[in-house]
Length: 211
Ligand SMILES: CC(C)(COP(=O)(O)OP(=O)(O)OC[C@H]1O[C@@H](n2cnc3c(N)ncnc32)[C@H](O)[C@@H]1OP(=O)(O)O)[C@@H](O)C(=O)NCCC(=O)NCCS
Image (cartoon, rainbow, N blue to C red; front, side, top):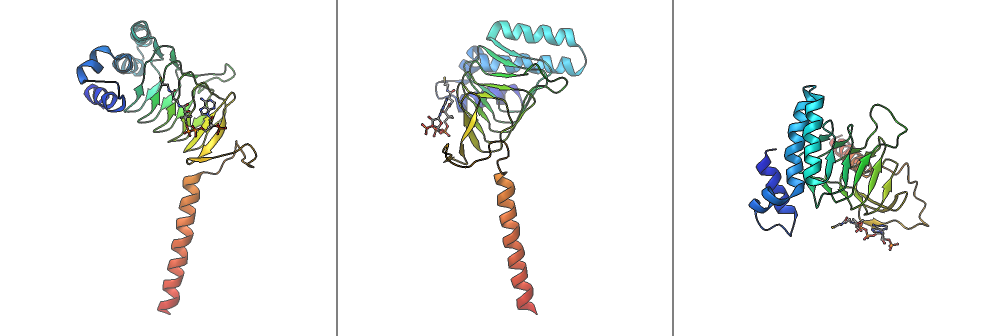
């Protein structure tokens, strides 16, 4: 994705943004993407000191610290910036939104891959922390101020400290519901299984009528 697309993406997602020029010149969420692209390019070529230097310059200008090693997909919208920390082994998918004071960090207990992996279209609310090498499924929303310490499946909303799933696919989960928070079923896989069994039933009907 080009820098122009990054700027257009921010303009389309922020109702407060008035023009492309405003985004390019004044938005920390745009500036840090420019710095990170350069820093990540240097990091991939093992120019670690230079990469760090670029990312630290970006941090001074925007208040957003993204380690040069972090892998970031296209269409990331960082709103407001300031106080955001994204660790070295973090991976972020496409079209995610991150508000101010979000930490995608380590717990201090893991080595190697020690930061989160975030799917596509994930929203991480202001002040939320996602800690450790956890997986956050696509289209999931993390409420402002939450602390996420475990993996989250696709299409859920999680809130609280530590975060718990409060809704699945837009449907509210109540504390009395018997939901296994750690082994919540994969909804997409469940739908595919349903479609698969209906297809098999239809094929069975077709074979019966042919005989
Ligand atoms: C989580 C969020 C995305 C809403 O998602 P949602 O699926 O529509 O959730 P709902 O609003 O239906 O709330 C579901 C439950 O979670 C609770 N909840 C929502 N946000 C919460 C939060 N930040 N912390 C704790 N609980 C929260 C609600 O109170 C509700 O519980 P209740 O029914 O017992 O009252 C939204 O609340 C949020 O936090 N967005 C982040 C926005 C942000 O950071 N803005 C900064 C702009 S500068």
